[in-house]
Amino acid sequence: MIFQDNIIKQYLKNVYFIAGTPCGGKTTASRALAKKYDIPVYDIDERFPEHQAMSDPAFQPAMNKDFRDADEFFGRSVEEYKAWLLQNTREQLDFILLDLMRLSTDRPIICDCHLTLEQAAMVTDPSHIAFMIKKPVNLVDEYCNRPDHQGFSDFIHSATDFEAAKATCNETLMSLNAKYYEDVKASGYFYVDRADGLSVEETVARTAKHFGLEMPGASAEGAGSDAAAKTANDEGKTVTAELAVVKVEKDTPFAKEFLHFVENCSWTEVREHIAGLIRDWRFTDWETMFAAVKDGRIIGMTSVLKTDYYDLPEIFPWVSCVFVEKPYRGQRISEKLIEKANAYAKEQGFTKTYIPTEFAGLYERYGYRYLKDIVNYGGGTDRLYVKDLQ
Image (cartoon, rainbow, N blue to C red; front, top):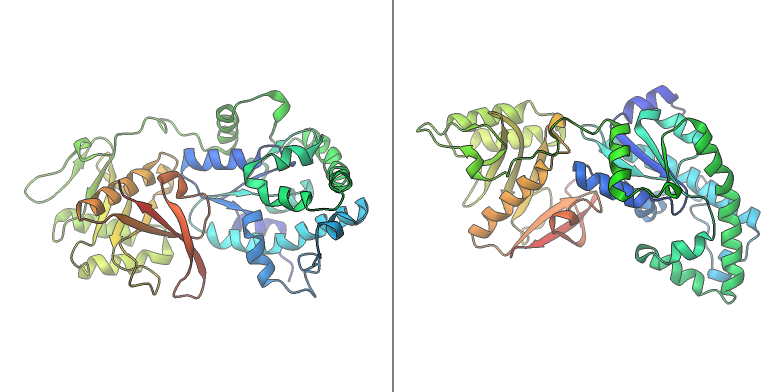
């Protein structure tokens, strides 16, 4: 089946692509943008094992090619190595695009990826892609010196003749990226060249402006505490001038307002489930919901629950249903919702909370650490994160 480019672009309209050369700063820029604007990162390298497990050698031969050791891997000619890399990237792209279509239906995603200029033109508009580039010189040493590339460093150093393996790798990467580097600069696409010496903050600011992520007042965030809200008339109605995160109480006008918000939110996958919990108030013991309120309007939510979308009754409490309306994303509101949920859980005597996600690098910034992979009721695999409450 062949999809036309306009269809692909429409389905990927919520995806912001960060591409470029090795050591150009893709990962650093992606993570920094994600942290500032509260947008999850989809890292294609982290997804490769999952995609490889789903692949078929008949259709994805490069993804399934086995190598006995580093000597065989780096013992290929530069042209063989180069052709394998290009084919491997092309084969994985099908899996990547399907993932992104699913994950970005109602939320923005930053994709840390490898795209040729031709692939970029196929999958997205120029306003939704940024290239982080660096002139390719001695890439192996720079790549191996990064802590997150320790696996590759160990692998190439296991070669019988490390210097020969390094030379082959450097020549291959040079042949792939020297022209690519110049083509990006001449393409008209937005790019940041590391030779310009921009700081991470400056790179993020320029890229965010290019993506249209900057919003008036986005950095002027309220404290997110109850002190920012006037919570309490006798009917339980909440009025705010700044951002506040407010506990939803049963049988109050605010609970009815919150139900209306949930029933009309864009998170279609869980909307009816959450609305059903609220309508019937199927919360037990300490379970509850929190609403983010700004200028008198509900704009986000989260919950503290005993169970989530997993057959794991021994694990609780879950910080779940973290959602912020699209116009208010990038203002660290999710962080304040999670902070409030954790403070509440601590008040209830819990020493840990758990969050499930499909993404790596999303909740670590809130103090969570990866615990293990878990299987949801739909049969899919998610990542379970835990936070120790101090």
